[in-house]
Every structure is written in structure tokens, then in C-alpha cells.
Length: 219
Image (cartoon, rainbow, N blue to C red; front, side, top):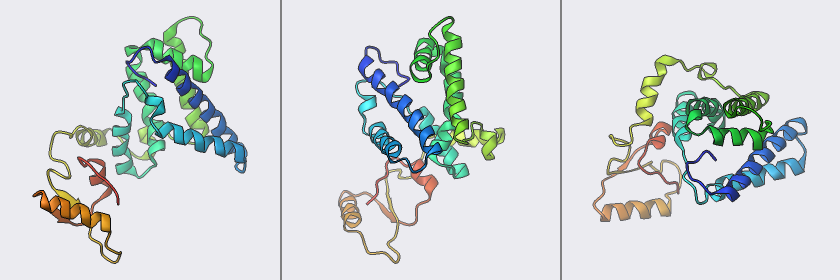
């Protein structure tokens, strides 16, 4: 939603409706856990959020997601929980880059009145998002999940290590079969890599390595 691309009003309205509906239905599910209709809408919302429609024709920014992977690696919390911590902080940090966009988010998603100072409208929208996360019993500070300032340099280095040595590094790493049946697809990929002169290493792969791999796929 927070994009530098202009003239994407249709997708903007779809994204705003998606966020507003998700917030409403999540709250309803918490009050009525067996409400089938609310859960059905959340499942549809999840599908739409991941099928690419809401990013159609616009520049996207996945910085928070990349940063969150390292938070999950350090703490084991769910990806969405980590994003609840990072997004409000990120929004406050980049707010002045496009105050109008953040004010629009506040107006359309949280019904903040479009009156007066845009900066204050935008801040109220971010505060409302954080309050929503609190209503879900989610943390909104790294300190609340056991991370502190001393953890940040190492985490930042890992997140920004795209051009340094990463898992893969021109090699194919594949876990051993152990007591499971050999995967036909896995063996095919290994054979193709061997034919192409790519070194194949069979060993266990940690979760952290997957997060920072050049590429990763599951079979």
C-alpha cells in the first residue's frame, strides 16, 4: 500500500477495503471463534493478500518482511507477530517521505477525520494500527520479545548481507533423505545440477540458512 507509484487508485481502494475488512473480521473472530462467515472472509482475505492482486501495477517495498525474518530467526515468533512489532516503527520512521499517503491510510482504513494537519492524521492512523495489534495481544516492541539494542548490529548485518557470502554461494545444498523415501523431484534437481557442473552438498539445513539463501525451494 505504501508505494511511490502514482495513479493506482483502483488498487489503492481494493487494498484499503481489504485492510478494513480484515481488521473487522479478525475482531469478530476473537469475540465469536466459531463464526464461520467471519472465518470464511478471513480465508478469502488471506488468499487475496498473497495472490499479487494488491501489488498490481505498483512499486512494492518488502523491507519490513526482510527485517522480520531475522526477528523470527532470533526469537521463534510467528512472521505476522514480528511484523506487528516492526510496521508501526517503520511507518513512524518513513512518515515524512509521503505524509499524504499515510494520512490517506488513516482516513480510509481507520476512519480518522480528514480535517486539519495531515501529519497529525497520519500519526493517529499509525497509533490506531498499533492499538489494533494490542487488541490481538501482540507485542509492538522488540524488548517485549526478549531482544535488546545489543542484538541489533548482528541482525542488521545478516539482513543486509545480500551481496556477501550466503548459503548457496554457487552450490546446491540439499538435506539427506535419512529415514524418508527419496524424493523423485529432489533427485531430478540434483542430477540436473550435477550435469551443469554445480557442486551438490547433502547435509541438514538450518532455518536461519533458509532465510538468507540466494534461492530456496521445497519438493
